[in-house]
Image 1 (cartoon, rainbow, N blue to C red):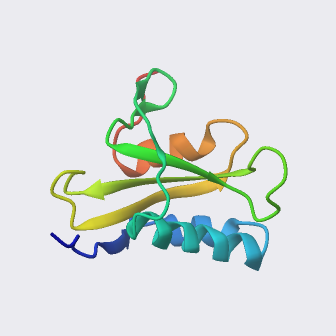
Image 2: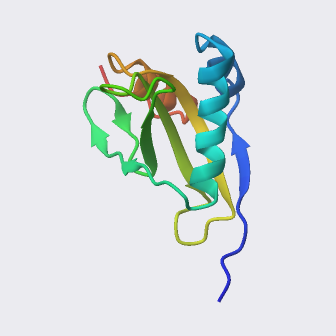
Length: 117
């Protein structure tokens, strides 16, 4: 049975994240990675629920870096909608630098799941 092609969607604010990336090469790679995820060519790692970042258990993280050497400097957070089993779309949630938890906190905020303080 052929796999149905998934749509690509994004939450409000994701486009702003992309434009905040440092250069055109990094922006293009972030968008290319989304297309590769949608097409099943690459896969991210599942996220979970953590005290510091909130509940991102329906989301995945994918590390990338256009330089390709050393630890990747950027992360992309995405999820399948309505869920992974019945997915009709890959939804981009947040993208940004890997250092710190900022991308995860942004993702939690966009999903209305900010962690309790």
